[in-house]
Length: 166
Image (cartoon, rainbow, N blue to C red; front, side, top):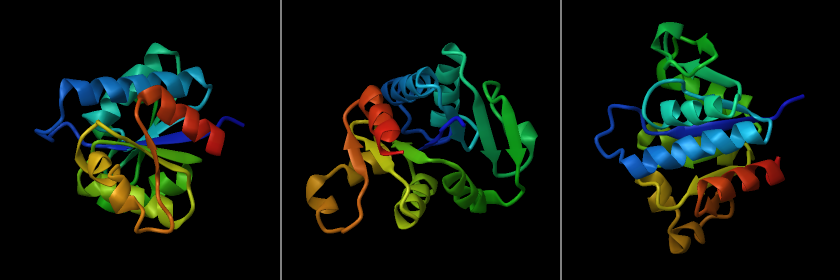
C-alpha cells in the first residue's frame, strides 16, 4: 500500500507567501511523488497548490481533503474529497496521513501540527519556509516540550525524514 504524506501550509490568500516558500512546497511535492507516496493536502491554493504541482511534475497522485466542496480544489488535485466541515477537516487530513510536513503556515497550519503531534504522527517542519514553521524551528522553544516536530532545512530532507519515520 502506498504511504500518504500530508502537506500543511498557507493558503493562496496569505500575503506572506514568498516565491521561496512556494518553491520549497513544490520541491516537497516533487520528492513525495518520487518516493512513491501519495501527497495529501487541504487541496486549495498557496503551499497546497505548489506542493500538488510538484507532485504532478513527478507523475504523483494528489488528494485534497477540502473544507467545503470539491469545486474548491486547485487544478493539480486528482481526488478532491468534499467534507463541508470547514477547519474540522484539519483533523481528517492529519488522521488520514502517515506523516505530516509543515511549510510556513498560519493558524490552520499550527492546528494541524498540534493535532499531528498529539496523536503521534511523524511531523516535520521546514526551517526557513516562513510562518509557524520558522517560529517552531526555534530550538530553544522546542526544548520546552516532550513531544516535538522534526526540523528540516530543505524539502529533500523533510521528505527523507517523513519516509524514514513512517
